[in-house]
Image (cartoon, rainbow, N blue to C red):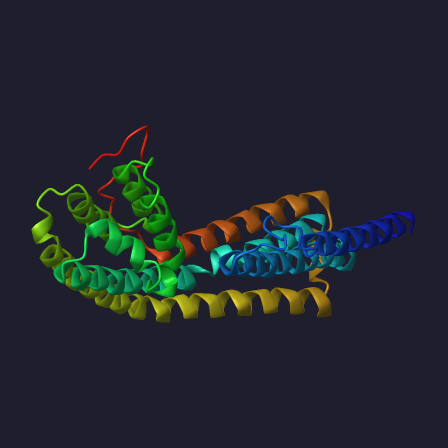
Amino acid sequence: MSIYNVLVVACVVVVISAMWGAGFALRGRAAGDGPFRSRATRVRTAGALTMARHRAVRWAVALGGGALVWLGTGWPIGGLLFAVLVMTVPFFFGGAKIAADRIRMLEALEQWVRYLSDAMSAGSMPVQTIVKSADHAPPAIKAQVTRLATRLATPRLDRNVVLEAFADEIDDALGDIVVLALKRAVNARGGERVPQVLQTLAEAVAADVKARRNIEKGRSGPRKETQTIVLFLAAGVGALSLFTNYPRMYATAEGQVVLSILGAVVLLALGMMRRLSVGGQPPRILTERNGGGGA
């Protein structure tokens, strides 16, 4: 009975700590909260607060739910596994969102490249065109283009390094090819052909987006089936734990060892599922900078 009381106290402490953490995360003491914030700063702060709120709720559910699982089943490893699963759900089941975000970014890159091509064809200078494009950049890459424009407008910064930083933010082979073309433009080497090159690149990006959409359409079926199997499995284990003597099998030290092994197997399977659902990306052309850029 005393052990039960200790666990109840521990559960209460965990829940109170989670609530305190949630309140601290939502206090809005982020950088840029002063009276002279720009609209972009306010948007970033609001987004950070929303993410902090989601993290706080997830922590509260993970810690409180894990403690309840421990109390209800007598499985400390079960409570730990529950908390780990709650915290890692976005990672294991977020493959579709990652792929969708990547496709939206590439679509935005295509639109931006077409804008640059049209503007340069009309006689606009490359650097000025890129700087002005921040006002017309699609939402999916607006932050990246805005940073690129700000850095290019700063004379003391090396243009090649600035463009390579933009390529790192896009983090895709197609973005690297676009940056290589823009390097030629801003350095005035063969710049007269850059608009045609950018137009060709825009068409290549559009074709790549179409191919990736078809791939994701094929992956969506197996991904949903796997998620359904996992949900039914979790529901079955929960029902057995509530309505049968199933928890007694793992109430011993040996049972907890077996449960930890089974939990590790499940986490490994979820990790493999996530890796298959996300897929690999084409290798980058521009390597990460180590004191300099490279092609």
